[in-house]
Amino acid sequence: MWPIGHASAAYLLYTALCRQRFDTGPTAIAAILVGFGAIFPDLVDKPLSWSAGILPTGRSLSHSLLVLVPVVLAVYLVARWYTDAEYGVAFGVGMVSHPLVDAFPALWDGGASWTFLLWPVLAVTPYDEAPTVLGLLRSSLSDPYFIVEFLLLALALVVWRSDGYPGLSVLPGIETSDRAA
Image 1 (cartoon, rainbow, N blue to C red):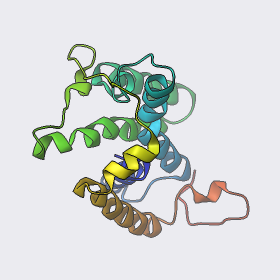
Image 2: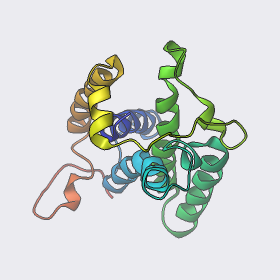
Image 3: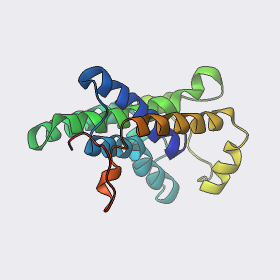
Image 4: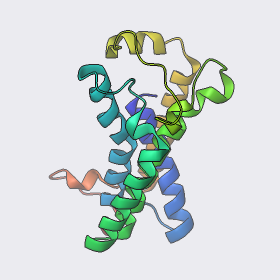
């Protein structure tokens, strides 16, 4: 999945959680953290695999629940200790949603793999040659899953607007109806 799909899915999950728990949308900082958490696994794994050749694939180390769960727990504890535990929850929702959304194609496509969720206990197929962003984009254009990302984005934008555009207020000169950050 592309970053827009991950960020959209994570935002929708987190805003639903906020509405259920607080009867309001996310705060500005929480919205930013859920977005960052949603792309964090790719920010770690893709460069370490594609450029550095340290990891076998772009879905291994930080996509693995064996690594991800302790990292999310540590971030939550640090956030609880220093600022607001909700910031750890927001980052955690984003980060945990990422590999789970990446695993969805395995549910309907027998060729897709979910073994990265338990890497290194379960093996992943290493790249013969590191992919390129343009190559991945070309191969994604014919994939129905790619269209789903834009539907998620459209829905997330509608929900984000109804939440008052949380997170946008951090840009200079922009006022929104964010909850107290």
